[in-house]
Image 1: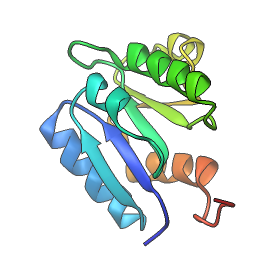
Image 2: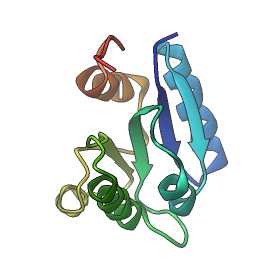
Image 3: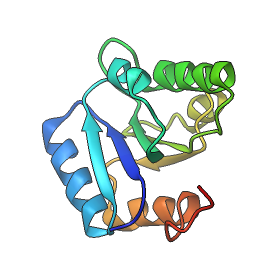
Length: 127
């Protein structure tokens, strides 16, 4: 098991389960929250990557990302990699909100692996 936790922010129970199983299959711990508010409230100290659904109820994924970015600046934290998960082609909007990358739903395990490798690598970070 790699160090750090990958956070999945997804409101669909089926996609939560599939994403969690895929990430665990890649050898990482995974935590799932069902809305943007919980993602913003979550202490991100042990999180190494966030997969953020865009179409969340209440606080959207775009809004949650902007709030997380504000929190990072306020607290002087390192920038957390956030990858958008969406069924709609809104890549520009995601990147403008402060997301680092974009995966079109349904996300396949190869898509998730590509992003995990890109932003987390082998888990041997300097922390």
